[in-house]
Image (cartoon, rainbow, N blue to C red; front, side, top):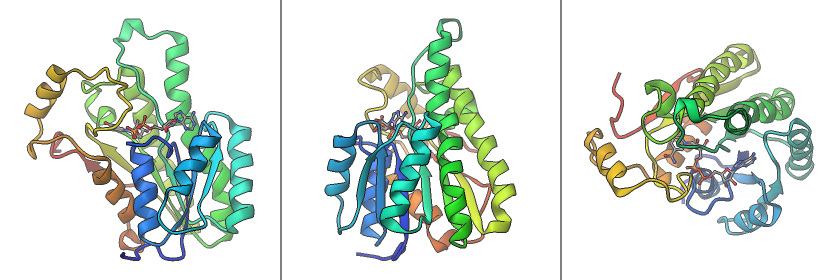
Length: 252
Ligand SMILES: NC(=O)c1ccc[n+]([C@@H]2O[C@H](COP(=O)([O-])OP(=O)(O)OC[C@H]3O[C@@H](n4cnc5c(N)ncnc54)[C@H](O)[C@@H]3O)[C@@H](O)[C@H]2O)c1
């Protein structure tokens, strides 16, 4: 067991999904010595995910990141248990494979509320504690879809939400640097999780693979390891960056 995150306290949103990026990030953080609070929609699932992490003292809480008050309440509960928070991973997100003209107002709200509003809500909820604690690292999950205008799985509203996350993260990095709070984004390519809800066909998968120099889809662990890097002191002089984890799918 390494210890890149020894003594650190982390909050990860959307981290209950068994094969998800958030869940794998929680596991990697715990392996590196962090204590982790898993926030997700369902309390039982969040608690079960926290209980399954290596080491002890982890926390599982219900929190809909789209709900400002729920984020504030979750932050208070985490701080009551941990006393401080050093790392926030804004990971919760949903996607929908829709074409432009098929996006309803409800679709737009659903997708942007989780990724974009959720990132703002949870960051606002934890920045005061990071400030008084002397600093922190906020990691925001965007997507290659933000950079290349979709074309992977999610629709234009997903690209817009994820591009919004990049802008929000960069603005937060600028504002929070003086508080020693670093804010960075990760833009994963296609990662094999359940976010596509069985709607990714073998044909789509084969097409996507043709454009990936490393010739494989990503695993949750590929992104989780990038989160360990951005959460740890290894990235102490990095803020406002966008870290591509895409196998070379987008080289720029
Ligand atoms: N899988 C990919 O190919 C890929 C690519 C680029 C970016 N991403 C992004 O990475 C992040 C994680 O994706 P994943 O593939 O692990 O997804 P996933 O579906 O496996 O997990 C997402 C988790 O978020 C939770 N969640 C959904 N809405 C929520 C809300 N309102 N409040 C709190 N939690 C909520 C879900 O319950 C689930 O546990 C997302 O932001 C996603 O957009 C994924």
